[in-house]
Image (tube, rainbow, N blue to C red; front, side, top):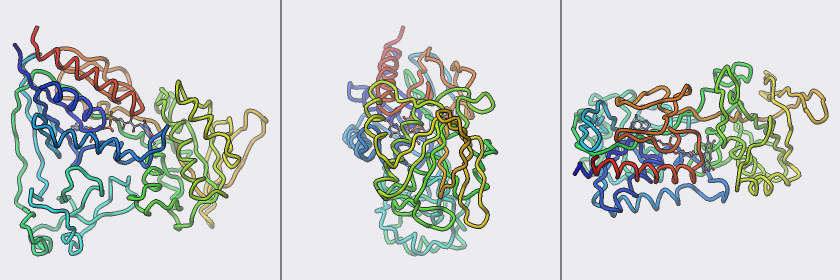
Length: 415
Ligand SMILES: Cc1cc2nc3c(=O)[nH]c(=O)nc-3n(C[C@H](O)[C@H](O)[C@H](O)COP(=O)(O)OP(=O)(O)OC[C@H]3O[C@@H](n4cnc5c(N)ncnc54)[C@H](O)[C@@H]3O)c2cc1C
């Protein structure tokens, strides 16, 4: 018999699913997550297509299953540094980075009131800042503060230490190393947004009102940088006219040669955010072809009939900025009318695709990859799950992760 423990790397929806599925049939599961919270990129979404419900409902159910299951152990701010052994009998080395906040934290927030240092808020994709001591987001699990050591002024400042009535802050915390013995591994480290600044002709990074689809999720979220008001980053004005530029870097040999499959649905969803907030607003989607596969055809049909949503078949060729107003001018050829369009917008949202996390950070264990860095299948006790395999929606990730959990279970049984 092999070792009946499973390691899950990545605590996004795929990793959480694999973990609870394996633990609920009796396996000991360890989740190693690099962020200070579980939930992955789904926690950063405003609503889920197709139902347009808040993603925290789905995550919350998984967090409850984790809290109630003594077989699941999770480590945040942790990464796998090495793997040795063979299928059924693997030894994994894990590094846990210091949180500088211990279990006594009640998330009262007194520390934030006195902290003088700031950092860019990565949860909101840089749209605002947090203090050096911060709660990653209001639904964070675990609900505990964390200190960003790159921004913190340390003991010389020490204001948070004085403000914390619970003795929860420990600036002397050190990184820890540990070894885990497991039978198999599920690798579920997900995806990163394609770097939009590489598409120079769209002006991301140069023009403040050009944002990406992941930033739009945060702008529309009640726990986002504007409390859910969709406003222009340049001047805080509510948006009246927004363009969504599809395939921003996708299906393009110079950037990502593949289609991420979810960007058309994400833009249709985000158009509903704009049009619900301001029914008089106008939303334009510039597309090559709308990809709403399978059951998502219904979602597309439901959204597209809004008279203030304009679907333009034509790839945006260039975006320029009016330096006075900071309005943006999108140039595209409408392939239906064959006319060149030059349309002015308050804001442009670039629908950038999904890049597997394994493209930039290769796992310290033998796995096979395709030319874009996606994990191909899995073997010898190490299996990919979710968006490390290919770009996927949440429902497909859940199915893929359940399959990975089953394969991982088989590996623990020995050969
Ligand atoms: C703009 C946009 C909108 C979307 N909207 C929807 C929607 O409405 N409905 C829908 O179904 N889908 C939507 N999606 C897709 C959805 O975001 C993905 O299906 C989902 O995030 C995939 O989950 P995952 O767990 O595979 O990856 P992730 O969410 O990326 O989770 C991976 C986890 O692994 C962690 N990790 C990464 N590297 C390491 C490492 N080396 N060690 C330890 N941990 C690591 C990460 O911190 C993260 O927590 C959208 C995508 C985009 C781009």
